[in-house]
Length: 241
Ligand SMILES: Nc1ncnc2c1ncn2[C@@H]1O[C@H](COP(=O)(O)OP(=O)(O)OP(=O)(O)O)[C@@H](O)[C@H]1O
Ligand SMILES: [Mg+2]
Image (cartoon, rainbow, N blue to C red; front, side, top):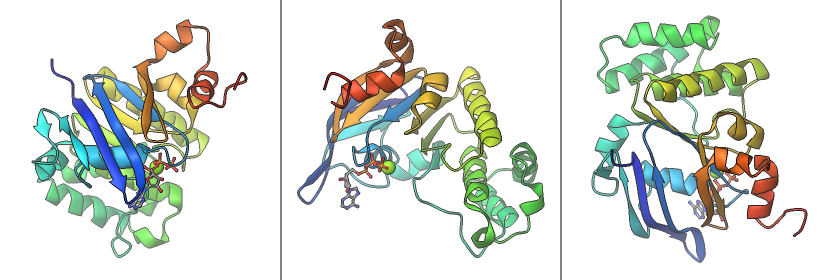
């Protein structure tokens, strides 16, 4: 089976800054792929290119077999996305927002699926609250629900767990694990290395826009290293650096 994500020499510059520099990367179906890297290393830029939100300066990416720059809308129809700093629209209630997403996604069972998410992430009582009045964590719950409402074969999530309390983190971790067990593919960026070690099958590490490592987590752990130590060495901040 061809990779679900195939990045070829993907590069993005903003003026003088090279945010992502010639990154080539394959993500196989059924993986829970973690994109790691220090602040400003290019993770969000990478996700935005893979979802057609910005165009690469050079290089290309195929997602689910489609060229993202050529067919950005078709890609976004198929995948689920939680962008880094996006909130649901302030003027809709939580329920209205999910109903809107269900319409855009042309889902027949939008209402049932939204109900499942209100129940699963335990925010039933917030259904009728305007998004602008929701707590940050509750807004993130809603972003989760919108990303998975159409049960995409691939979801790209920029830092999925940072706003969640420990109970929600546990639930979402389980959900993501099960999602890939059922054949889906998940691509996340994260700073929480303990969680990446726990749930990711594969990781890639960006440093100053360059890919400095990509491979299975099992391979790192087999070398008797925790992901944190491995990460610090990869970005030149290890004990020996
Ligand atoms: N729209 C933009 N205009 C100018 N520079 C940008 C833009 N977006 C990103 N950059 C720059 O590109 C580099 C990579 O940023 P990016 O947001 O991809 O990093 P990141 O790995 O997601 O960081 P963080 O962990 O802090 O979220 C940074 O130097 C950033 O300042
Ligand atoms: Mg980011």
